[in-house]
Length: 634
Picture 1: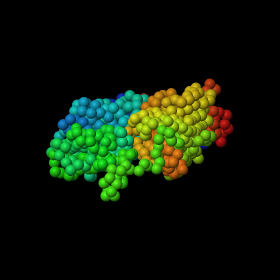
Picture 2: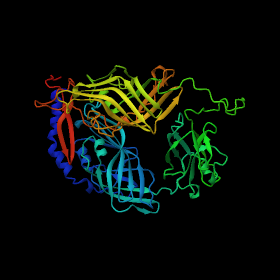
Picture 3: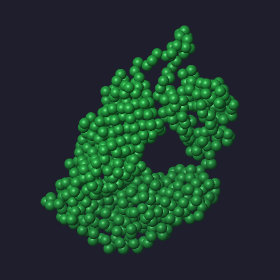
Picture 4: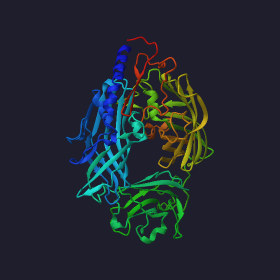
């Protein structure tokens, strides 16, 4: 598109300001919208009336789908709000709490203003029981740039979109419940998902909902299941494990509940008086949805309250569940535990009939000790949304680069994929493997490992280069810290000054849900949850507590074969925490206009539309328009 054509489109949009303000503001506050809702079950809600008016006034399209429809109430003026069909409910009329899920989606598009798509789908209303609640939904959008290559993109993301106030308590009559939403206010999370069109606290449409009363005791789906994390390679002196159960009927077993015991599988497992024989004996806390979680510490040897000493070597330990004081075996589960120094099967001298008596097991051929920690690697992607931001870019990644060296390499693990194509802009976006440097190893849950390598992120049109180098992991117990050298090289035009933070505490680590393997002289810990340690640690791109990519590491003796062969750990890194909801970091390192006009973006003839703000009944709709200063018309 030529520069003159772009300016004509922006000028035409600016000329509509007075009309836009008149049509949007005439509707009044969003909360005053009459939502009807007396004739059709489901959620009657229109998101925001001024947003619908804006779409209607400037030739946008509104497309309900998946069961969502325009409200059929003939008394409601156009553009009408929507009715979303009920899908499921956990609402409890006795307490006034629970969640009602609805189906369907509504998509908005206005090509003239570079809004290619904004979709709100699958709303869910949660009642807190005190007259308040929340409204969640799945939001996706594509804005600015071109339809085929939009600048701002959000994949479908579930967010808590609005805080709700209800008019009185939900009213149950027969098999249905009706509730009126008197006020809906945009949350901070909702404002971010709305791409900044509205500020947090903006008033959204009121609404109403009618839904069926769910069965008081829905049957559990599937068989009871129990997982123990970690369950193998456990420290015999004490390892924290998280035990989770699903499909346990809440208030089942005639109200007597279920029991959790950890220890050997004794003949008297279900004996009410046998609890003293177990390392752990407790009631299982089952939630309304049939799930439960217990975190505890297990050991390879203990003396029960019955005064008897037991070891996992003699009688392997397991996690057991069963119905309390019942012959019903529906809830019986057994999950074995394997300790690092305890063989999975009996060896010589363990009563296997070989005539070895109490002869000690032969020593392992390779053992990781404090004096022999000699190799390993660290696999970490830092934060996937940041890799996406630099590697895919906003409106393209021309001139951008992500490079690694000094012992670090870029892998194909957890690459950014668009339309089935990894690294769509040609910039490598996979996670990084850092080489082993040195280690101070004391035990499998207490060590410090330094790794080598540097990764450099360059975004010339956004005026910065970010460097991550030489990470170090310190673990003590179930938590840890990842330190690294962090440097931001900010050029003129960047909204932040350069910083250099050697050895800064970059991430807080939580090993509770990680997978630990300690065998054959090698320690491997995969999927360690990581959160940003401070606002400054990531050079101001994100705030403290932000989820980063999970961390996976290996450490081994010289004689050990590391998991994954020569390369160490080639997997074990999830795409979860660091993917984030937004492509651009919260500090928004974007080109800023200088004193002489538009910034030098380095993006050639690519138009990045800025400079036009349309105030639509409280909407701050910013259409970005930037291009290289002095570039000739095309």
